[in-house]
Image (cartoon, rainbow, N blue to C red; front, side):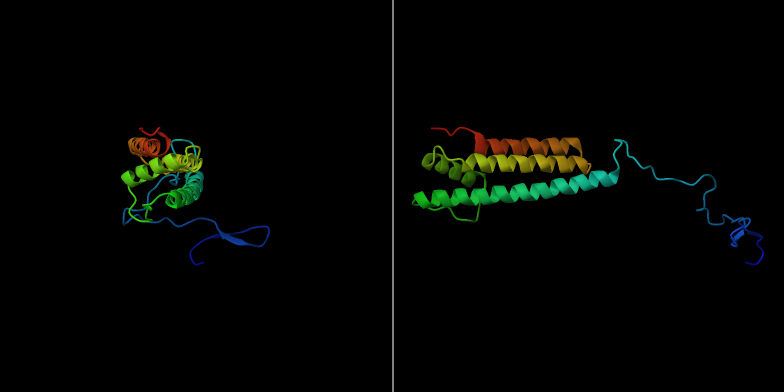
Length: 163
């Protein structure tokens, strides 16, 4: 290294004794202590841990949602076995879901598939809300999603049918 003084260490390695001064001609080099990224955010939990738990909860949303969907298909098959007008597999909305649930309650008063599908869907919604919180979505949005989801779950799966 030309122009630099070096020190010989006891282990036989040569290291520079001083660093040359750098000129700050472009203005992007900052003088002073090095800038460090904080390890913890404002809540005290590392971002990596939050993202990891958020992805785990999203996987739970997928798993419980798949189980709820398969239970819903079992409900459709059970109702189609006893009705003259079978339910199709496409075109589902709130009104068709309500009609299916009412038919299932009529044909199977002690049936447990409807409650099982509702519980699985509610757990999936809960995990979705927790994952949204961990990903930092705003609280009013999470509250609105939870309220609308809970209202639909109640109206489809858990309310008592009108006679």
